[in-house]
Image (cartoon, rainbow, N blue to C red):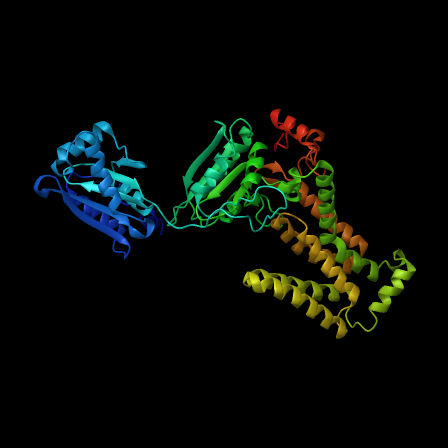
Amino acid sequence: MEANSVVENSFGPKEPISKQLDENVSKIRSVIGESTDFIMREWSYGPNLGYRAVSFYFETLMQSSENYMKRTLQDLVDHKVGPGMDSTIEDLVKFFMHDGVSQKKAVLLDRIDQAVKDIIDGHMVIFLDQWDKALSYDAFSVETRQVTEPVNESVVQGPRESTVESLEKNMGLLRIRLKTPSFKMVKASGGGKTNTDIVYAYLSDVVDSELLKEFERRFEAVKQMEVLETSYIEQILEDSTFSPFPQHQYTERPDVVTAALLRGKIAVLVQGSSGVLLCPGLFTDFFQSSEDYYQRTVISSLIRFLRVFAFIIALMLPSIYISLTTYHTELVPTVLLLAVINSREGIPLPAFFEALLMGFFFELLREAGVRLPRPVGSAVSIVGALIIGDAAISAGIASPIMVIIVALTGIASFAIPQYGIAIALRILQFPMMIAAALLGGFGVMIMLILILLHLTKLRSLGQPYLSPLAPLKFSLLRDVFIRAPIRILQRGLRTRQFNRPGR
């Protein structure tokens, strides 16, 4: 099996290009084989058309193939060879070997495997008879989505550009925002049959050197695996595979990526994926939004406190209701307790099963709304929730207060900017309800302690997940739950102490 995988992943023999055109053609065709969009075009040039050449390319990866041949000969004519029809192989070899290739994005190749890789990457490769090199032109041109407004991270105030599936466009969106020599982008390729282009970026004078070494060590495994989307890389880099909490942050906003790089993080971009992976992702990062920095300090800080409150509601509200109504009724005010008892009159299910059933249906509706086409999905989610909630109350399966609690829990999870942490809350609320049903408030406290212990132990690229809360760093709390004024944040950036991991 290992031997077969080596052959399949190869771009052909690592042999030098031969001077014999027919031999090169045979090797290229034996590696790539027959495919509808694989084009081999033979043509002649020079006096009496006595010299042969062959062009290889995939027509589905480029728009115009003829222009590259014309540009090649025109390149010669414009410089010093003279009329294109008088060019001989000696003229071409002398020109390209001594003067290079002046055409944009063109290189000379020495080996067969290099030629095969360039053809698959969307290049046009030209072989000339009696020459042991090949010309490779970057002719890649595939229609991609244009830069539009982010779908998952919309803002009222701020930039409205979104990363897209084109790696070069995304790199350009970052480069135009970080005009400094210290901004580095390193390109690599995934393994297998995909050979996906991957780029990781960082600021060399900001990123922690130990963090970068740890990232590059783990990134070596990425080069050996087939990568179809950014999430593949996340699953390779993460410290704890079975933790419900995300250990890296996703974004589709170039301004968010820029801000993360300024804080010493590493960004990972993948060809064909619009999501950018930010490493490491710490717990406090998931409560922050790009719009926090475009609003005034007081407004941003209040909104962040609101998100923390929403996190607590999404995690604990159903379990608190179950524990209070089942074990600790003496803690509920008499008037409120009578209202709860009255609303639950005739309900055949205990509070736990009632919450479990309504929570399950709410998650089912939410998932259906995500998977359905967008114009239909939102309508199904809203109408379905209204109809099922009303029908459950009318049928005596659920009480009105339980419908309110489940709805508040769902709405609170939507208030958190990062989708990954919201998924973690959706998972954790069910074991919280089970603990509340078994042990009441004591069970809720046990679950909270276990979650806190897990968060304390969790790492992201080797960095403490709860940093800067644990271990506590007072100098880094300026941008956690309270957002300090911009002038203070800028001062932190200049001193390289602004929320840097591991500091």
